[in-house]
Image 1 (tube, rainbow, N blue to C red):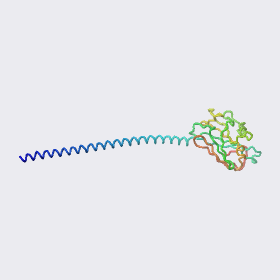
Image 2 (cartoon, helix red, strand yellow):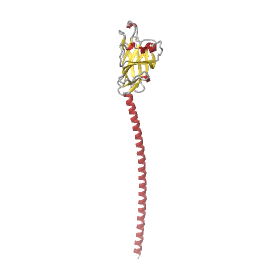
Image 3 (cartoon, rainbow, N blue to C red):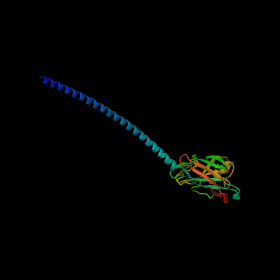
Image 4 (tube, one colour):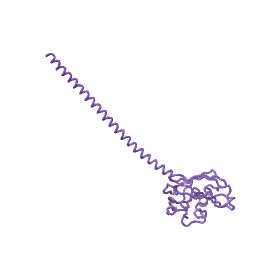
Length: 241
């Protein structure tokens, strides 16, 4: 009888202990599940932030790359610079007129020469020149026997003033895109930026003189001017750069 009661009590105790262990396991499982869900939520938020940040970085990288390509591949290039010495004999004078031949860079679509600026240093004096639409000539279709004898130069004379102006002489323009009010130079076109040195600086470019400067477009690379005039001028038209 006593043994029977003991077995009953023992059985109840064991069941109670098993029940308690089951409750503990259930609570532990719920805790793990909560932590797992929290980790999933944190990972989802972190992934969303990373994706958003990566998208922004991609857009900025693309924009920066496009801008860099445009700056490197576009712009204006100088092809040659000619000067004119009107003195007789030429050795007695100096270059009074300057023609800076320019073209768009390979990757450039179009350049409005009316919006470029010309910085020129002669004899230690630096001038900044802007376009004057009254100094414009197009010889791309009719040609010219003397580019320094074109009447447009008269509008850059000392009598006309305009010491801070330069003009445009169109030499190649198959598409007829360059006019006086909007001298837009397309790919393949060529024009000369013309300057009256005497009118701007009050002096000529003499033999062995150092001249520097740059033609700056709205976008892209600048055309660099850097030459030393010949020691002797033997012709009226002088190749300077």
